[in-house]
Amino acid sequence: MNISLIAHTPDPEGVVARAARTCYSRGAPQSLLPPDSRSLIRSLVKKGHHSVLEHASFSFLLEGLSRASSHQLVRHRLASFSQQSQRYVNLEEPAYVIPPSISDNSHATMIFKEAMEKANHAYKQLLNAGIAKEDARYIFPQAVTTILVFTVNARELLHIFRLRLCNRAQWEIRQACLEMLKLVTQIAPTVFEGAGPPCVDGQCMEGNGGCGRPWSKKNQ
Ligand SMILES: Cc1cc2nc3c(=O)[nH]c(=O)nc-3n(C[C@H](O)[C@H](O)[C@H](O)COP(=O)(O)OP(=O)(O)OC[C@H]3O[C@@H](n4cnc5c(N)ncnc54)[C@H](O)[C@@H]3O)c2cc1C
Image (tube, rainbow, N blue to C red; front, side, top):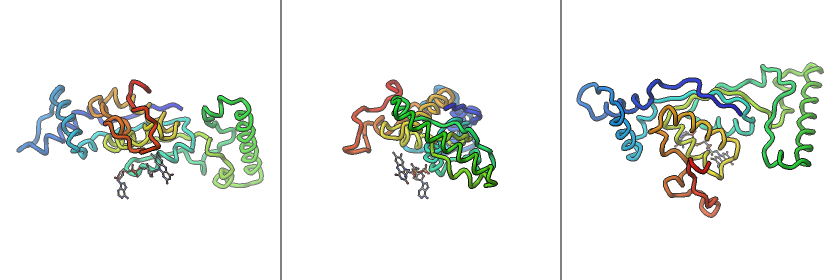
């Protein structure tokens, strides 16, 4: 999997701080520089005044994510997506993701690879038989990789991190979110300093299914 941040709001923390100041200023607010912008952002996040975080947005290019994982990502309705089409793109010899539990087991790896090869072979045969790509693709397993551009504002991204960085979330989307968190932390460190699943605030939402290992950026 390869994830890059291809665009973002210039000076995202400056925009967030200025938007917040608008709420409390008599006239048009001046821009606010660190460290004042940082302490304002911290207090907004703490108070739950999260709408101001919507003024900062980030666009990621994700390559090599499985369709199993991308299907989970696109459930986040407040983000925007453009995904490689299996209707229009010829996907002979597709790359696929092998989950670590399978790649660590040679017998399981053999079974998995055989299934992928059969699916790929069937795809080619269907195309050769005159079947359109949009129908031949039905043969593909969820392991095949995809490419997508994902644009999201900081508020929704924090929400996504809350759900998907949890140790109980699926491993591949968790990995993708951890990569994205590293990238946005370089650009907007104050906004994302408290990012993580609910246990970063001390309250696990998983009940008896909790992992017992409170999440922190350091132990990832
Ligand atoms: C560990 C895990 C397991 C999951 N398992 C399953 C599963 O088995 N089956 C399954 O179908 N899904 C599953 N999901 C997906 C989950 O149900 C959500 O669809 C997904 O996480 C998107 O998050 P979200 O609904 O919070 O919203 P987003 O689309 O990210 O929206 C953000 C927030 O906006 C608000 N919002 C958005 N749209 C609406 C709306 N129409 N009405 C009211 N408020 C809205 C809500 O407050 C929402 O939390 C799972 C998710 C996780 C993290």
